[in-house]
Amino acid sequence: MDLETQRLVVRQFYEENHVHLFETIWYGRCEGFAPPFERIASVTLGELSPLQVEIERINQNVPQSVSDAFARHLWYSQWNFAHLFLIKVPIDEQNFFFLFHQGVSEDAWDNDTSLVEVFTEQGEFVGATHFSDDKPVKWIERQFTHQDCRDGKRGDPPPPWSGDDPNAVYYNEPLWTEEMLIR
Image (tube, rainbow, N blue to C red; front, side, top):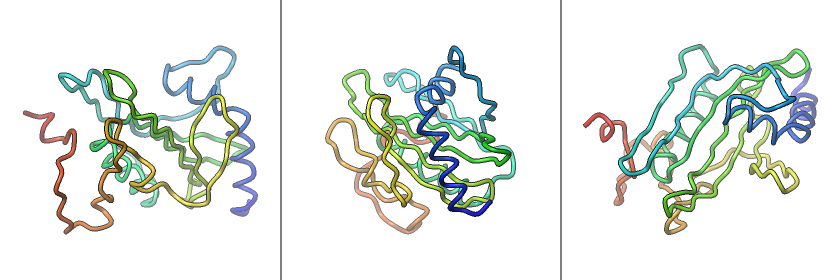
């Protein structure tokens, strides 16, 4: 199946099932909907004060582009409080990776960022969209950047992903880091 056909298949699947798919990932089940999927990695935030973060690392071989996408969104999550879910879903005998980025909107924090990026099993980017359960799906042809992941208090974007510029200097501090969690 060529990439354009894969795009059409994934988009049709997602447009028909996005609400149920997200509920299944978020809550572990959704009545009447049970596509087989495999959770590859996640970041879930519990309470914001004191901060509780659970990180489930990628522990299997995935394409570098998928691993980089997860690392990029993990970076954004540290600056804007977001849950991440990386899953693998079989569609028409092909596997696809879906990366959900769900902003936290509670405790007076209002990050309504809800993003999804999709990749083929080989790591080719298929498309991205903003997740909404009450608006039509609109696909975009690029991966999300820091500009798409806004801070819930000020509406500012996080800095660009450190993987794009490992020597960059940032003048603000992230909201959380793994080092902070260990203390």
